[in-house]
Amino acid sequence: MKIASFNANGIRARMPVLLKWLEQDAPDILCIQETRTEDRDFPRKPLEEAGYHCTFRGEKRFNGVAVLSRIPPAAAGFGFLDGDERESARLVCVYFDRIAIVNTYVPQGQDPDSEKFLYKLEWLSRLKRYFEAHFTPGDALIWAGDFNVAPEPIDVYDAKALQGSIGFHPKEHRALSEIQSWGFIDVYRQACPNDRSFTFWDYRIPNALKRGMGWRIDHIWSTACVAEKLKRAWIDAAPRQWDKPSDHTFIAAEFDF
Image (cartoon, rainbow, N blue to C red; front, side, top):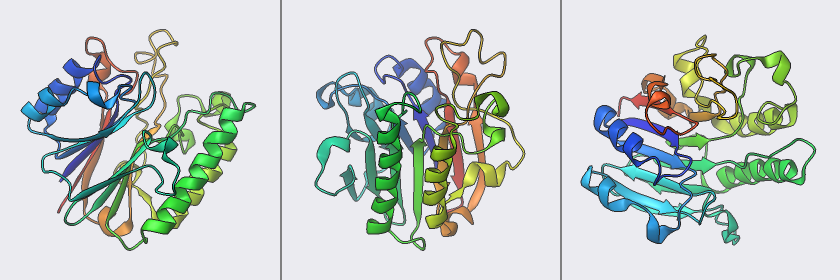
């Protein structure tokens, strides 16, 4: 089984990139974040013609998550399932015969001194409670998406200069570590322990990709029973150089199911 994740930064604008990559790499499951479109405008027809079932929830101009899958999921749920529907465009869980996949678009946080940063930290705390309430570490579970946090110094282009900035802040690291300690393994880092590759290059930095000024903030994590079946994991930076790219690229992992 090949699973991938991609922050599209507007799925309708990114359809040429998305369809090209789907044809080229043919994942079984693709988790997409920041679709930024209402459900009625989601471009499901060309994706279905490409061979994918679409599970999605979005809103106009902001947020939005989707899971494309070769087979339809047995069930799906949106948001934290705690009675608050406001986060339904940031989290989707799809269930298949052997495995559950949670796709999240974690809030960016804007600035460490802002209320949006506190919102991000609380969101991550709610996510941990969500995992505790609905799963156990022994379940076959994959968590993928844009976490908006680079976990380690190797995951940013300049750890010293970026220390304490949004996406690489000690409070974010603690929040993410608490979720990981529940029972997740970073499968990309398991497969590539010393690889310094990135999934995001800020549009605002001139020639960020060529200069190597990136972040690994898009992830695929899993519980141990899934991670032990990992065959390989990789980041495909090529689509970031295609016409009209997202500021993110695809991260993928293949498991022997």
